Length: 111
Length: 107
Image 1 (cartoon, chains in turn red, green):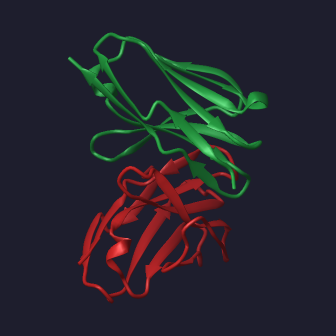
Image 2 (cartoon, chains in turn red, cyan; image 1 turned 60 degrees about the vertical axis):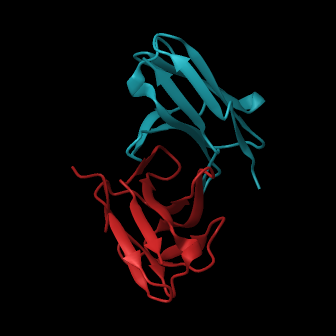
């Protein structure tokens, strides 16, 4: 039972490049979330999804897009990366509003 | 939006000491979780505690939802307890985090 798996674990992008972060969960959870963590600021919610085919904006959605085509996967896209998007990205899933579980994180550097 | 405040922001202890971390939130919530982020960045679930008291070994947590706060107790601290402790509240469709308490346990 892998839980929540994020791909990749590390990535370096040049300004203006695009990329997609993949989150996969094997717990049949309905809710999935994407967060970013910056030094000294805790975790901030980017986007979330309450079910397959649905997504919604969180606190800091600008510059990101998401898709939830399959229940087990939640993708986070950066269309044109900026240095301000250098951060550690975490994905999480939960059964409705009950206990959430996190992936191991993706460290992204935009140069 | 809901405000989640954790105190203290930093805490330094000698091994064996006890500590209490606090989480205040500004509105009614569906549930509350405590996490430990270890020095390698991994987020570890400690407690799912919308109300009441739970204990797990040296750690225990209490949430008083009607008064909008939660407490995390660490007894007989060990160096492996070092890291950042976060509380997170669930508003129904999303989950918001406090800024965390950074705990350093010295041998």
